[in-house]
Amino acid sequence: MVKSVETAKQALVDEVEHVSYTNGDPLGNAGSYRKVLEYLYQCAINSLPPSEVVEWICNIYMTHQTDEEYRVFHDRINILATAFNDLKNHGKLKNSVTMNNIK
Image (cartoon, rainbow, N blue to C red; front, side, top):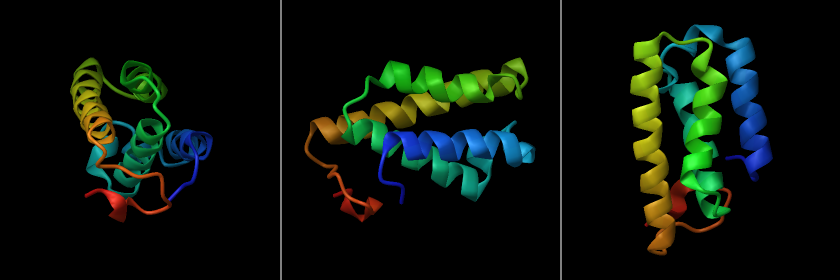
């Protein structure tokens, strides 16, 4: 598990640049999905606004997706970011190096 938002961001940027076959549906690939979740988790525990988080992650994939892929990805990321944020707001997430701390 990554330990900071910046590390998680860099992992996603590297994924977009070097594992381009996952760009159309990043949530359809286990490695990409894990990196997306790590980023969303780090953003939630660091209290970043979900709307900014969603826009940043969707924008790095946008140029590699069709309009439909982008719309679906945006909706899914919005749901995940909201869920992580809600878990944080209800004391269900802890700042740790493992996601085993989701109660």
